[in-house]
Image 1 (tube, rainbow, N blue to C red):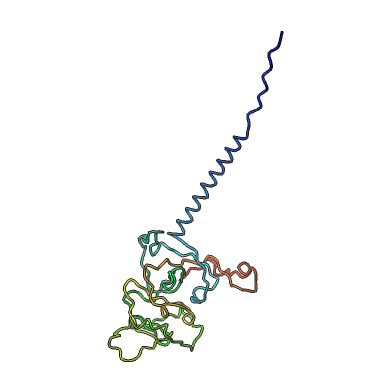
Image 2 (image 1 turned 90 degrees about the horizontal axis):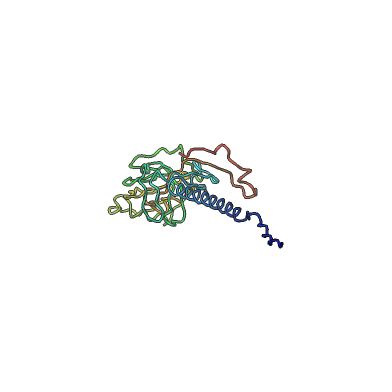
Length: 250
């Protein structure tokens, strides 16, 4: 009797599809986690905290070249990206706050200075001493002078003429300099900013007031710091200022 042909032995179920599905699930979970991390980073950076590096010595005495700062963007009302609107501020900038802001001359650059003039304040400087609303200010706890005895002048200070007190009755020529100028009045919705290194700071004396819409935040602390040294290839590792790590900005 003829035997029926044998059915071919079926191979074991292929594992390829299962392995592919497992890899796909893993990739999906990884992508989801990465997307959430990026989203969280963007939210934190836009609304809460952003990192900045100090590139110049204009705040020397308070902040040093090579300091890395964490800046609180929520305190003054963070800007909502692409809308031009701001979140409600925790508080408004105060006199002597250290403030990060967009430079009015070039909005792509951020500056950090000390706020010394609020809207409506009358400001002047006599031989390097700031006078606010008629009262000389004691700023010895944070101001430094790296070029004493020098007092450059020039037309770069000429913008101040428009804001002089009683400018209509002024009869003598106005010749402002770095250490002698004013009195001028801070207009509404603007601030006057000075660097703590008064002899080496490009600040409001030179280019004018800062609109309140340009304020970005307030530095909280120094999270990293090193002494830049062009002769050391790894200066960011070998020249760490350990004592400054975690120091609060005042």
